[in-house]
Length: 290
Image 1: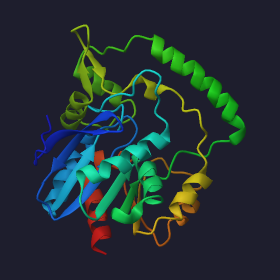
Image 2: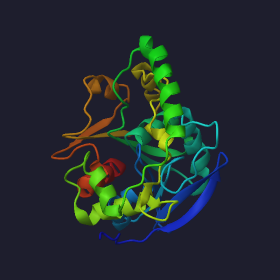
Image 3: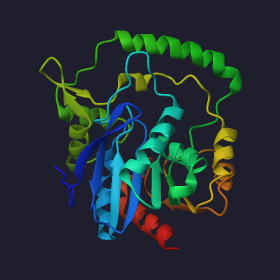
């Protein structure tokens, strides 16, 4: 099984009333990089990238978003609205970094980082979004339909028993439905970090809160992202996988970040940090050194 070259320190920080799991590599590094994972991912998945960034002398921090990894789930009656993630990030950063930060977000985490950078950018040195320009545009007229779907899926998830998988290997098999090229070594590492033993004593559950499997009620609008992007006043790097979640309006969205740099990583899909940590580390280092 894959093992990180550099073993991070683990701790927990209570942010917005939730106990967040935090990993820190190279505590004495000269500059701090904060890595924010995407939907249904977790901080440990940045380990290969962190290894490479540590070799460049950086202090690297990653944390599990609410309801992901080892961070607590929201309580009864709570939900995971996008603004909650941005608020968690705003509250988290002073706990994990002093001075200017290189902020890096993947996918959902990238969109949250962009919104933060357009609101409270004073402690940022740079912003890097990896496949992080948001989901496809959604129609405002579909909002009532989305709310109905939200009502139904929340009820269904809350009433359903947690899904049990017989082994960690079976969990890896499910991960390969989206990422068939995930190898045994790193795949078992991710699956073991992303699961916990079943309450019944046999098999494993995913760590993430099943509420994440419901459909969010509010449509995503690119003009909202644009409003934040236009307020970002630090150098922005936009990274896309050649085979990633490319958007028909990708160029328009990217243009909202003034003076941004765009890098496409060849031969890789959405999970750039899983499958191309060397290329991603090089792109980030070039951005920070420019």
